[in-house]
Image (cartoon, rainbow, N blue to C red; front, side, top):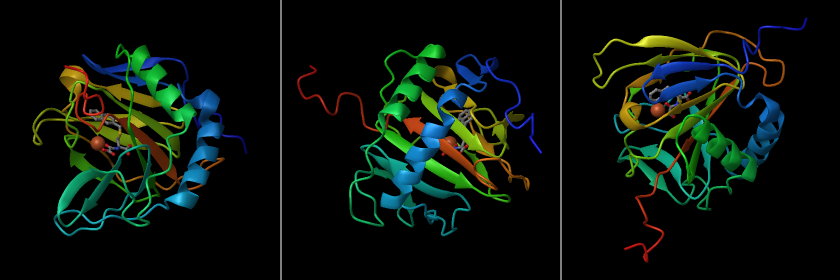
Length: 224
Ligand code: MD3
Ligand code: FE
């Protein structure tokens, strides 16, 4: 049976905050190309479950592409140029990824976004991502762009303290979230995924998170 509601609505935007938006279906036109690139990336740097500083194994499976990749182990969180599982650089960020992140960011008012890190998270039913802030990046002026693929998830969008109230926002295949500026440090998370199946990805959700991880101008010693 064809599920007409797999992608919910396309084309609109939801306003989550002063500088936080969901661009509904923004990545749908190139979703299949994105999935083909992800299939290739995982042959070089496979998905793995990392350990948190607290000693827990993350239920999210992850890999990265781009100059820097987000990693976690008992010592803490950091961005690394090398995949600790292979010792090789992370796979190159495909141009389609870069262009999608740039155009989504500019659609939301953030011009000239050049991500150097793309975290690729894999969820299956039951996987969750607890409420947290993204604060391992040094240049907090850059926005973050997140692309949802596969089965739907409900994300929690909170305040600036863990205890603040949250709203729940469903994210579907092809949806893109952009947040930055005053909303950059909001707590957020993903509720445990419900059993579901997507026509292409099956019982999986894959999320691409584009970030600028390196500090301002660190790659341009002539800037000042
Ligand atoms: C941030 N990933 O990897 S991104 C992460 O879907 C991460 O895999 C999630 O958070 C994922 O660090 C969520 C989507 C998102 C949505 C709304 C937000 C992130 C947000 C609102 C404020 C801050
Ligand atoms: Fe996050």
